[in-house]
Length: 414
View 1 (spheres, rainbow, N blue to C red):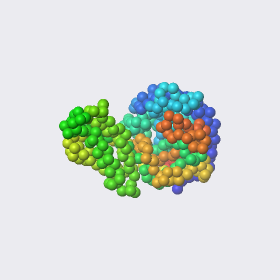
View 2 (view 1 turned 135 degrees about the vertical axis):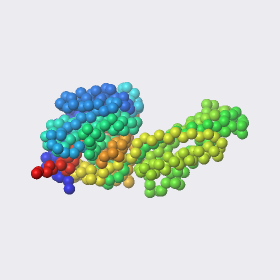
View 3 (view 1 turned 90 degrees about the horizontal axis):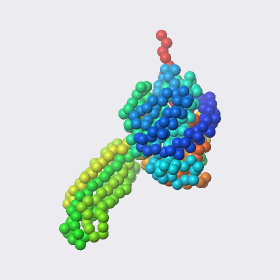
View 4 (view 1 turned 180 degrees about the vertical axis):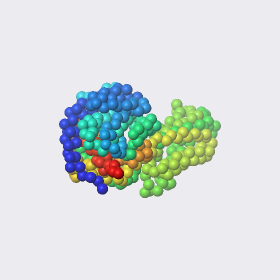
């Protein structure tokens, strides 16, 4: 049973009043993107803004920040997260606030951070009505899948202990209206796990005119590339989802020499732990077999990135209720209406949080293809509309308030 908050429009109204401030935050952050876990300017700016609201943010690991709001009434703890890092992409937009430092906020993390700063101000102003505690998580290192795990290891889910969590992510280049929300529909994985592997092939070099004297690592790499694709086409059920991509194949320096070594790099994505384990095992087995067949030594270096993002059915229902109450019944669609199957093959390190506590996600479209937002995320020309900033801030704040109210702890009287 989920409550209907009659005053839900208040949060939306407050967020709308903050719009100009949120645009200022976003433009500042967009101009100075930083990478991975090293975000000194970004973290300092976020800390300064939070302190200006009367909040007391504390560091969590390298470049991470957290702050708690509420706690005046006994209750549970809800975490809401924004990621803050950019990408090593040279920006190619004509924006007046475009980055000039060789990095780019091409995934919208500058919007996420600005929205969560807006939510902080709304929640702080309404602290007395919170039946529990909201913990804000400002996270570095999402693009490299390092940040969430690092912050968990440094205690972000403890003191106070987190009971549930929520993330928001903007979209762009989508054939849906700007400002429309996209919601998960069932309690299941919505984005894929992400792992990487490197294969080092050691053969025996020789003159290009004498291939019989060589163990050609490039020949081994060619056979291995084809064999690995057979995992997807012949070993994985057609109703399951997995991707194996080879992104690097290299070796040799000139056209008449068979090299000693070659190298391949690839990535693996899937939606369940069993399939993830199978993919890793078969990459090792097939690589060893192909190497033995062609008399080469093959080494596989396999690195686990992050698991799949799980969503909780109860939290998903609460998200649907909050978005409908706050923005209207026509303000959202289910994720299967946008993406067949309702799953994103991209990865998100909020997965580490979702594996630890019940979690949900919401997506907010910030760029329509028919309105000039034709490039996807991670593209040097990608752009996002500022007009969705207040909606994201309201969604963060309203969901946190509503979930705490729906899970309100009633004290027993003697």
